[in-house]
Amino acid sequence: MVLCFSLTNLELGGAQVFVVRLANYLAKKNNQPVYIYDHWPEYRNKNTLHHLHPLVKILSYSESRFERWFIWKINAFFRLVKPGSQYRYFLNKKRLQKRLARYNVSLVNSHMSYSDFVLSETTLPPGCKLVITLHGEYELSMKDPKNNPDKIRKALDKSSALIYTAEKNLKPLDVIGYKRDIKKQKINIGFDPALFSEKKITRAQLSLRDDEFVVGMVSRGIADKGWDTAIAAVQQYNRSAAKKITLLCIGNGTYLQQLVEDAADANIRLQQFEENYQDYFYCYPLFDIFIFPTRFEGESVPNVLIECLYWGVPIVASHHAEIPAMLRCGTEQEAGICVEAGTIPLVTAFTTALSTLVSDQALRLKLSSNSAAAFKAFSMEGVAACYEKFFNEVRS
Image 1 (spheres, helix red, strand yellow):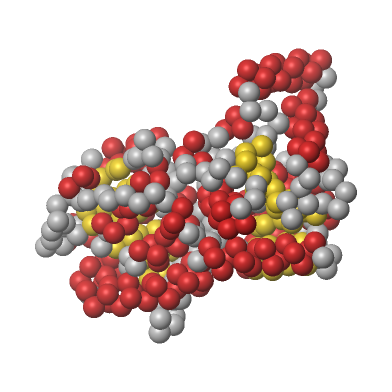
Image 2: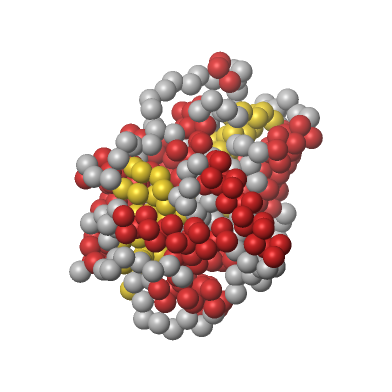
C-alpha cells in the first residue's frame, strides 16, 4: 500500500504534528516511502519538519518559490479579468491529481478540512481510496459561512471511511443531518519519543533555580489555548502564598510575547526555542506541575498532554474535549485534575486546583505514577497499528 497523507498546510498545529510523527513512524517501520501532500506550501513552519525521516517525501503543487510567485501573479491576473476565478486553486487540484498518479498512491488520508474539500473535487487514481481523519476542524468550519454544510457533505461522500479522535468530532455530522452509513473508527493520537533527538536541558539553562516550584505550559501561542487564564491563576495564587510559584510559558507568536510583557511579573517567564523548536520536549522534566486551561473549540486530543503523560508530570487542565478521558478523571487511576468553572470564575477554579497540587506532594506523586498507564493508550506503536489495520480494511 502506497500511502499519502494530505494536509491543508504544514503550520505548527496538532494535526500537522501528529501526521508528521505518524508518517515518520510508518516510513521507518515499513522501510518504504510515505508521502505528505501540503496544499499551502506558502505557509510552512520549518519546525514542523524537524528530524523528517528520509523516506517521508513532502509534495505540493510547487516547491519552487519563484514558480509559486509566478503562479500567484497569474492568479491575480485571472481574478482581475474574471472576479472570483481561482487559477491557483485549479492548478493545485490538478497537480495533486498528477502527484497521486505518479507515485501510485493507493490510499489518501486527509487530516484537515480544506484538504478534505479539495480532495472531494479531485479525481483519484483508479483503486485509490480516501479516508478522512477528523480532529475538530469541522466544529470550527461550521461557524464559517464559506464552509457551508454542502462542502462537508461532499467531502464525506467522497471518503470511503472516517477516523475520529474524539466523540465531539462527530457532532457536525448530526448538525448537518448526514445519514450515510459510512465506516467509522475512533483512533487515538499517537506519540513516539524516539522521534526526538535526545537532549539534556537543565533549570540553570533557563535561569530557573533548583528550589523554585515551576508550573509549566507548552502550546501554540494563540489566545484560545488559555494562556491568559494560566497567567491570572498563577498570579492569583502568588498574591496569598507564602512561597511564590513560577509559570514558565513555552510557545511561539507575538500574542504570547505581548501577554507576558504586559504581565510585567518576574514570576511569569517566557521561553521560545528559535533554533530548534522541538527542544521544548526536554523541558517537561523541569516542571512540578503542567497547566493547560484550553478553551480552543477545535481541541480534541492535545499532543502536549500526551507528552506530559509520557514524562509523568502532574496535570491540571480544562474539562474540555477528550481531556477528561485522557487523564482518566473520575477513576482510581487519574493522571491529572480537570477543572470546570461551575459557579465560580474559571481563574479561581484553576487557582484552587493549583493550590491543591502545590500543597499536596502525595497527590502529585500519585498523579505522576498513574501517568505511565494512561500514556499507553497513546503509544505510536499501537496507534500506527490501528491506522494500518483500518487502512487495510478499507482497501480490501
